[in-house]
Length: 311
Image (cartoon, rainbow, N blue to C red; front, top):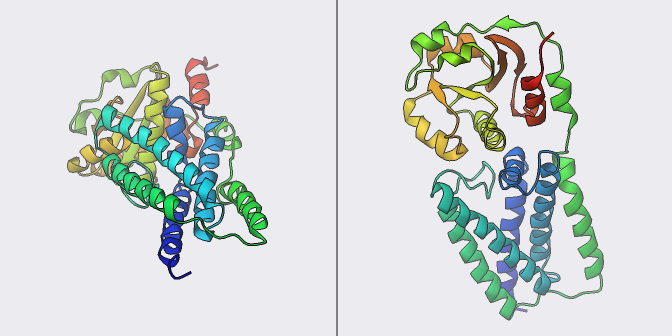
């Protein structure tokens, strides 16, 4: 038993990493969901379920390793999942470089793709060590504990962060009084880039976001996917904050395809209000809908709005 002690502890520590990785992805889970849409392996309707299934798998692997049961099979599944995520990380490095947060631990622990690859390599090495020298525990009620962990793992993500498809349609079709978005200050006071005059006419999604707001970054990531999937959607960012924060903002969100300007002080507050992000559906300078956050931003509904003729 004493000879096994270091391997038991190592298995528990590895399991804890998987569990922490699963739990930190849950809040906010949307960032993890968008990854599957961005990779074209899911759509907006299926991504929430696929994301929760992956979180369940991580939690289940972690639980088995912590309890040191069924470890021989668990090592193989854990190694396969780490290799799969590593392939994704290599893709990130090739496409965008070693920039931004890879999302391995949600927004709780910032980790670049290269750092995450090193972490995965270390974990794979430890799994190989355990596979060779540690076979875990075997006792009468192992199967009961196995199925309890399986059920808890499958159910937990839906309890802690359930899927709700009703919010976007309900909110987007909620009647609101139309009002004109006074863009004069945007054209006269904007910095870094000059806003196009075309924002005054036609339909546009204009998003007012703070460079330091984590919810704004999630909204930007979602709109970046909108633009990639449908370039016809006109999206414009009006950003607020220190210009030095522009680079980390775009490194994290990868939303470099969306045009933007910087607007500071009371001019920004006058147009955006105090709650970030403020996302406006603007038609000929008239705000027809105001979405208060990324939850209420739905690509299908935005496309319907853009193609609709106002009566």
